[in-house]
Image (tube, rainbow, N blue to C red; front, top):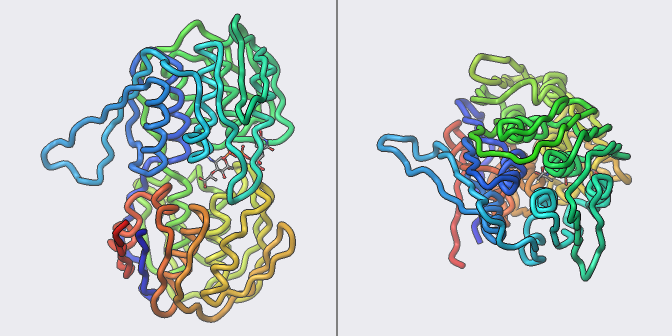
Length: 431
Ligand code: EPZ
């Protein structure tokens, strides 16, 4: 298994291109199941999760192809992918596939909307929490689906099609909002979602569905209206830039010091995190190209945060922010309100010398003067990258194990950091 070796202590200076957002690409790819025609997606990141989803969609009958690289094209430029679900050949998403990537459960919505039936394995728990799907199933039931749970599978049927409905989410859920939108676009009549997720990825999915002929209004607010249409057609859509990747490198620049341009980052999607970074002592400038983060000389100030649905501080940046706070001049409190078990990075950060006390959903981070490199590993994507951030400011060498977690969500991580002066390399090991 590959590892990443980092020698800390270098400032970061340069430009980091921000890739397309993983968490937008996944639902957008799943939306291809809604039409017989080809959905072309630009700016799709080349990540393990995307490759896995291509396999999963292939199982349902989706043909996948990618444009060839043109002469002289940057080897890292992402090439448009084409997804064609001309015929759905299987309405079952088996355990072996869904258990490898939770978001693949969302195929239940387009399969049900288009075929009147879907059988999808329940995803089960994961490293960051129990992560139930009750609200996703509630939304489909409101739209008229009959759902039974049989042998670990959710079996949803709507032989006479789905019907528009009022769907009120008792808790904000990104996956619930994605699935309700994908199901309601082909339902008969009007659907209104209330307490919907307002994440930029929801807005991106709605924009793509509208380009495919759907009629969705209000995405990005708490109330989303969907007027059902008879069928969707093919479209071209560019995946939005990854706000979590941008936020991660912003934290890295604040941690290591220096001056980094996050090329392509959209500041409006990152407002809460950028405000917190400013309060922590980084200088944040919005430019035509993206966002520039600088920290020269001044120390890091402690800031208390609490994660919240968008536009609040994203849970997907909580681990990275905690890494930054480990070197703050004082104590900070980090409250995780979205997932009950998203503190696995705490013990690993402690291996680097961090002082963190956990009490339920609150972590109190006592900043230390210096961190020391060590071998570390983590059990999820964002936790892993928090260790990379800490390692950039640690004395000596850190070896981050289980790099496959990073490969699920960060494209060309070591090249992007290396180009800004970080000493970082991938150590490949056979097998
Ligand atoms: C999405 O997960 C993201 N995944 C997560 O990113 C992200 O952390 C999360 O949204 C919150 O922003 C993708 O987009 C692929 P939720 P999702 O439904 O949709 C509870 C990463 O690192 N809930 O918004 O699964 C749930 O347990 C990943 O890239 C229910 O109770 O998250 C959680 O407490 C990790 N019942 C809260 O809602 C349900 O039926 C928010 O979850 C559904 C959710």
